[in-house]
Image: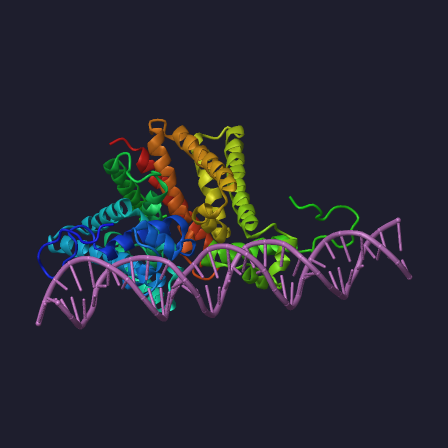
Length: 211
Length: 211
DNA sequence: CATGGCGGTTAGCGAGCGTTAACCTGACGG
DNA sequence: CCGTCAGGTTAACGCTCGCTAACCGCCATG
């Protein structure tokens, strides 16, 4: 196998491509998304990166720790990315609707390009140990609330509870990408992204309409 | 399926409420939805209906068979219900849009009232043995195609591939109910149903808009 | 009143799981 | 040139799992 990579002369830097840890996380997310957390064995994960079984414990405390790191990473990226987009829109003096559109566009990029992670994000939360689960749930809640606030900035008449339901519904809509496109690459990524974008905004607008 | 159920002369066939089989299926669906198929043991399922472990094998061939029966049942109900609603709308001479609305309304009823089943329906398919999986996938595909045809009846300009993506997206939107309302009963079922209904139709309309 | 079988019970098996232990190797800094 | 140590290996442990075996009580029926 590849013993050592052609990295620079420094003491030890990540091997240019992906570090072992990152390799493992990537393969683990693929396998967890495909077969479920309990449906994947540690030997299987090891085999996917060319090492076998217990060697994983040189990089992670256990199987749970891999799932925890994946879910915390996803939730953090989503929340931080969302906060940044909203903040940028605000600083640029753009209208509230621009912030909402930025949230939608960012989520779509994520849902299309990191399909496995999005799958884990709303499927495997309950497989976490209680402490980590609380932490991830908190991050997810913050992300949802960011959307709710932004949405209500565009449609102030929308009641909070209703807005929250609408946000969850749109998440479901956007995350449907995991069901499309069997292999890995979308037939036409941009077209799919635009379709979802428009459907999401239309759904929001309708949710806010007075009846 | 089952050899001897209520049948003729027996004084005491179905225990008035749910048969043992139905009890087991109900509890199994709850547990599978909560912890995932691999995350639930047969002892746990047995305990949930007041019997213990191996007694389940008097009613089912195995754990796989329970999941199979649940998923086949769900997929069949969805497809048959959808076909019936579309047929009824056609016989009544209603416009194509009425058929689409009937599909949406029917799916929402299902998604709200049988939340656990909807969860299994799009999460646990890959845990089935290959034969059963093919069978369920076929039923699901027929249901999707029914929606696609109906949608294209309303918006003939919509390309089939695009329509299919839109249908999957709306399924994701409607199935988001499983994420709402932690305990069991929705705060206001009718209001939620109407909100989802309108959002779904608006998303469809936007998907069909020419750009 | 014997009987048959439905629907339970407990014991236990064999496989697979996550994890630990003990050991090895090759690269690198002093 | 040697010691350290990161990052592998295989063996094995203990536990849990799905499932089978063996047994049994109840109750409707002939």
